[in-house]
Length: 290
Image 1: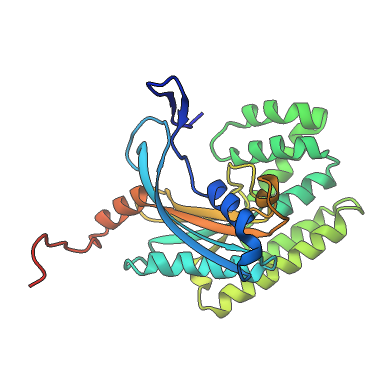
Image 2: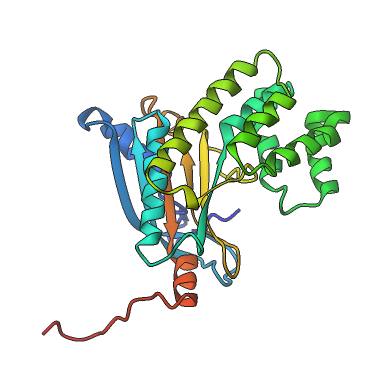
């Protein structure tokens, strides 16, 4: 719905680039055999979305994208989250100004499988979970009924409980108290080990104060697979400054090899607003160097 598309004077259907990730996934997929792995890439480019311009949202904006291809372990996720924190800290922002809301689509997927949700309904269920903070309970139940029938309310209660957990210990306890099906159990146990690895890595990097476990973050784009995260403004208007996550299947879906990938993007619009608000913008002087 946000694709900025139109017909040009030659009668051709044209769209302006809404984001960089699919283009980058195609490029890496085509050149992967000649590149040393893991592949680390960054871009700064203009993107366009057709939406109502307002504070923090414009139809044209620039994004910094940072991505790692070819590394399946949570070490890549930790490196990117650390890069995001260090990038924002470089402007003078601190853990009092922003946090990283950390979540996991894999954990949600295994949880849904524990409710016997089939593969076709995983994505629709994740889309409802993504909107739990913004939609009324009645609306959420209405969207969940085609998937869960009479168990929709029961599922919503458990899902809300999961979104309210704020520590790794409470996350582990949740799955002990609500044991999944025998099929989902080993998947969830393995996933919790990945969580432990990631959090230990981030803590070892001295970034504990920035990390906030928040399973309410699902990220709206369907290509995300594993850990997902958002840099979120704490003071003033609570808004996302950046977002990203793992997208292990996108390169293959776009015709390339099966290549794990993870990345994030920082937009210029909300970041500029926050830096203005905090009086952290550098003083630019338009004149000769000497």
